[in-house]
Length: 355
Image (tube, rainbow, N blue to C red; front, side):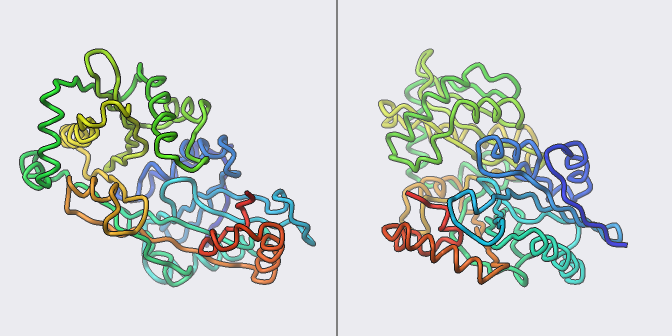
C-alpha cells in the first residue's frame, strides 16, 4: 500500500534516515533537516518534508510553509503557500517512472488542497535535474545556466580548460604569496568571514534578505557540513568562501572579500583551491552556480565560466492550487502596494513583497 506522511524538524532522525534510502546522486545537502532548520530559524517559514513511498520506491519533498494571513490580508479562512529554502529545492526520488510520479502528485495535491495551500514555488536543483520529475505537474521554466566542474578529470586537465584571463588572474594572485587555508571541521575564522561578508553585501548593495544575521551564521557553521577557504595576506584574512558539501557534491554557498585586495584576484585563488581540494577528497562535482541574471554578459557568470565550460540548466516551477483565493490575494496586494506591481510582476509569490 502507498504511504504518505509529513515530517517536521521534530522528526529529524527519520528525515535523515529516509534520505539515505535515495540513490547517492540524489543525496544533496539542500534536502537535509539541518539545512531546512537553518531557514526556519531565519524566519522563512515552517520546515516540512512530504514523504511518499510505494512498492520500495520513495520520494521526499522538503519545503517551507507560510501562513498568508500573517501578511495582513483579510481572507475568509487561513491560507498558506509553500516554497523551498534558499538555494535549490524540488523533489528527490528513487524512481522516475511516470506511474510513480503521477501517484506521488495524486497524494501531494490532496495534501495541498486539504491544508489550504494556494500556491507553490520551486527552484529545481541543476545538478540533480529534478525538474524532470515535476514537469508534467507544475509549470516549469528555464531560468539560466549554471557552471559546474567535473572532478573525474585530474587537476592538469581542468587547469588547461581555464580561460586565459582566469589563468592570468591566478598567476597574479600567486605572485602576492597569499596563504591559503582550508577548514572542514573547526572554523577559527568564522567571525572574519561574517565581517567580510557584511562588507561585501554593502559594497554590492545587495538585497536585504542576503544580509544574514549572526544567528544564521552560528547555525550554518555548527550544524551543516561545509568547507571554508580563507585567503590571507600575511596574517590578515582578505577573502573567504563557504562551500556546502555532502557525498558527491560541493556547492559554492557564500563568498566574501576585502575590497582593498580585489585587484590582486584572491577570488580566483579560492575557486582554484577548492578544485584541488575537491579532487583530493573524492567529490564528484563542484557546483559554482550561475550569475545574478540570465544575461549572457553577466559578470558573475563569466567569472565562474572561466573555470569550466560544463554547463547545467537551472529551472524554476510553480503551481496555483486555489486560483480564486490566489487572485484575491494578488488583488488586495495590488491595491495596497501599487508601486510594487510592475517591479514584481513576474514573481509567483509577489504578494509577499510589502515594501
